[in-house]
Length: 388
Ligand SMILES: [Zn+2]
Ligand SMILES: [Zn+2]
Image (cartoon, rainbow, N blue to C red):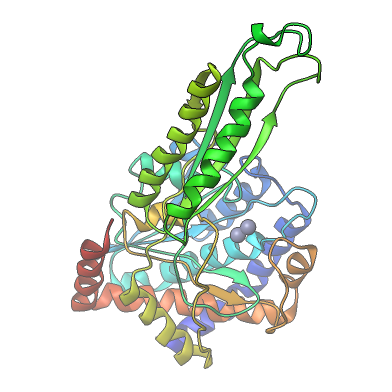
């Protein structure tokens, strides 16, 4: 099996390199990835997938499906292809998406023997308000048994955790007045914004240490001689668990409510972006992937970082067993993410070689789970026991 998978990958490699290069040359921001979406769906169609475009209400999203004639589980690979402003593919999503689409095509070529269904989801806008969140809310992952992807970076790392994130916006409404001549007639919305920050700073001592609360004042008034009647602040609240993050968000809201009461302002509370759930790695699936990539290319996966940002694969991991490991494209040179250097690293021969190793491991991992019922049950059992 390993030899035939590696052979199929070799045959597909020129097309995959071209896909990654074209997306690199034409970086598109979240929800504007029209060309990237077309390039992915073109190649998936060519290899026999049924493609739904404009998927789940997301214009640049897609779902490509191939169902074999034999019963079996459903495997999903998640392809990202959005870029960053100014620096293009500084997160390497040109290569990330290519790895997922490549894995989907290779698994499809051997799936008649194995059984089951393979899906490639095109999931836009990971850098902003990730489409995986919409897909999960719309139950698009309900029939998926395992979900896999791998992110390029500067070292091979096991799938780990990410922080749950809640975006919250507070707007305060006060009353203008001459700030010197008749301040007693004014209600100061900027004070409410400042007090919100101070209240949150008092809260910090009493929260779980892995949590993060960070914010900015978007609007704090227009002129120093007018009492500001409007202010707007935005915060991200992050924690290692979704449940605790919801509790913490409520405390942050109370900080803002107290500031409104103290100043006499009206308050409006809204969510200004999608909330991200924390990533729960399925360890059974993850160790299988780690063993297989060692078997394929003698690659040893390093431990994941303790603290991390937030990823929309977190949402997926709450509804089906999921892994999100990292693969090295910089030959162990420390290049930071979200840089032009990392974007350029996606085009090197070294990166292309690691793309092949990663695709092989993603395909062989899925093939093993499809054909080993006990292993699948173990993955499912772990999933049922680790949620929340
Ligand atoms: Zn990124
Ligand atoms: Zn990324």
